[in-house]
Image (cartoon, rainbow, N blue to C red; front, side, top):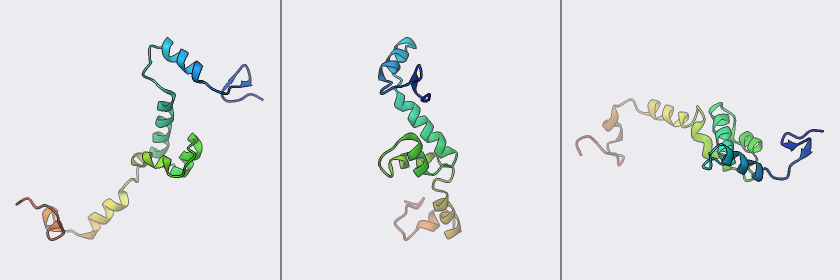
Length: 106
């Protein structure tokens, strides 16, 4: 059986040495493997994958860790935006007067 990450069909315990060689050979010392993980997580959220599935896919062990990628979800804050739009049809400053908001006159 071949493993996804392998050397000649055998399991690899760590890829740190390989990554170090690749980074040195590519003159990309700034690049770290975790950047791939972050990129995959952000892209999965951008495509609407729920955070719990992202956590499982990229190996987060604690619940909620993948929530840092929520801002990439196309629906991020959409319910709040709709609630604000539908809740009060008055314009800008008028909607917030008397609620601690700032008006243009201040």
